[in-house]
Every structure is written in structure tokens, then in C-alpha cells.
Image: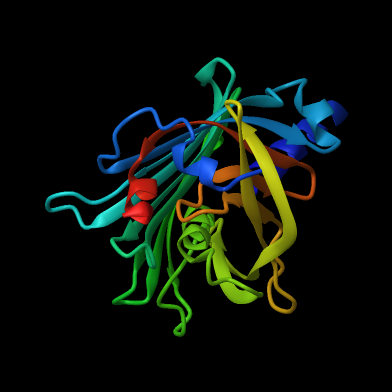
Length: 272
């Protein structure tokens, strides 16, 4: 969640030096299987986008893919890849998460980026039996770092950005007010609030007008301040398609807008 802010700081240093029913059939390009896949366009909003354009793109494409367990596999894997218009070779942000088969417990979280000669990635594995988070961090200009962190004793379910969005999709119908919880970001836990946005929007996807309900993840009063935020607009039917995702930082907001639905595992499961 601090990718944009870190890159923005680096740049500054460099410069100084309608209907919900329609959503059920939105452009699903393949049979359900065990994979759900959404494709997005993205752009940066905020003043930093004009500085950012000097070094890395302010717009591009993104892919949100979730694989559900089959056979002997008992975990859900979700990944969000955000790239330059030319693809991953032009630079990227990446988020990955692994959940248990209920989608309630995060087993692994990963985030990384590569833009120009700057790269960073961090992977955390959660050992709930021992109450530990095992963190492995690498940066292009530093030695790898390994550390083990004790999880709070009252936290048996950890969420990151992707698993928080998954939670909102699972529980959209029942979240009628603020839900206080925490989010794991950059090796730290922050108190946050999940809450509905009192705003209903419609989106046009390949000529179809679809209705959506908004939710946001914001910093909770007291405790360690989370330097981020997330907004997501989900289709107002049982499939809860994420039409728009906004990943916020103090210097800019990355806005992802749905372009197509490539595979529909979550959607098919919700409709069954």
C-alpha cells in the first residue's frame, strides 16, 4: 500500500536532484471452471500524476485473478497485476494473497513493484498456530531482510488489501454499517473500518448499464494510523462484480475500471 508513496518520494528526490440484472451477464468470456478473472484499465488521480508521468506511466492495464481450490488444493489464491500499457516489461505493481478455503483467513500476502531501476517485494506467511508472521523483504538497493513478528493474541484472522476486498464481496449484503477490524500492510497491522458508501453508482460495461453499491476501507480512530485507503464499487446483485477499485495514498489514487470479465468462478458460485 505504500508503493505509490515510495515512488512519489523517489521522484521528488530525483527532481530535487442502471439495472443490476444486467451485471449477471457482463461479458463473461469463458466457462466458470475454478478461476475468476477481471481485466481493468487504470489511471492515477491526484497532483502527483503529472510528476509521475516523467518516470513511469500514469495509466495502463490491470488483471485481478482468483483461483479456487480443486482436488487436493485447499486454499484460494488471488492476485492483482497492474502494469504499464506495454505490459509487465514496462513496469508493474503486484499484489498476491492466499486464503483458506473459506476465504476468512489470510495465509500469505505479497506485494512488489518494479519501475525503471527500482524494485521491491515483500512476502509474509502467517503461522496462526504459533501466532507468528514470517516476513521476507527484498529491495533492489539493499540486502534481503528476514524477520519474524508476533501476531496480536486476539487476531486469528488477518486481512490484506485483496482479502479485504474478497471479504467485502462475500459480505456485501450484510454490511449495513461500520465494521471495525484491522488490515496488514508492509509488515504492520493497522486498525481500520469497513463501511458502505452512501452513494449508488451505475457503470456502462460494453454497452450494458449496471448498478453498483460502494464500500470503503478507512483508517480507524486511535491506534496506528493507516496511510492508505480503498474504495470498491460492487455490482448490486449476488455476484458482486468489482466494477471500480480505488487504492488511495496521500499523494495519489490509483483508479481501476472494469473492462471485461474473462472467467466467472466466483460469480457462478454466487448464483448457484
